[in-house]
Amino acid sequence: AALGGVSEPLVESAWQSAQLQTGQAPSALCSEEIYTLAAPVSAEGVLYLGRLDPVWQPLELELVQVVASQAALALQSVRRFADQQQTLELHRQAHHQLQLWVERLGHLLEASRVLGSSQDEETLLDRFQQLVETLIPHAHGAILQDERLRLSWPTSGGWGEGLAVLARAVTQPLLIDD
Figure (tube, rainbow, N blue to C red):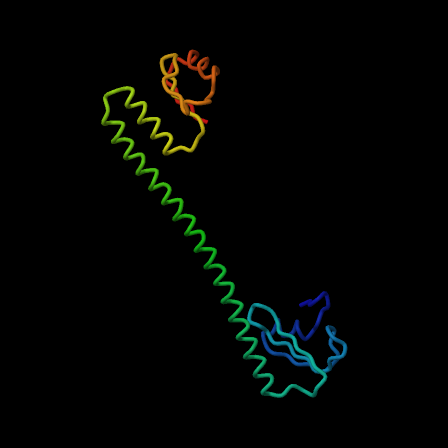
């Protein structure tokens, strides 16, 4: 394992063996350190320590192993938490999309009821316009039928003469929306 671009045999040995390793020679990572140790932190990495003091005591080695184990658990916990947060966000987004579709389906059901309840063509066209405005975001809309413009919204501004020309050219009923 290369740390900071420097290869350290003690770290490599600890990583490969998954066992705490100690050494008593100058380190490639810090030339002043005489007594070094490397403790694997599960599959997360290696804890490296060095000092000038005498050999590592058994209690110190035990403490390093406990700290390395706790660090491994903490790192794994952080990753699991991040994964759970990401999954939760995906569920929130899916729930939001589902809510939108339920709302749209509700509008469609209501529209079917409303559109089916009228026999008057003008009332039907008004309800149809309201339905389209409710379900589909847009700035302008029109219903072209029988070579004429039947309904255009909004009434102010709008599409001008171009829409009337299109209405005369169309032979089939047509709904235009932008």
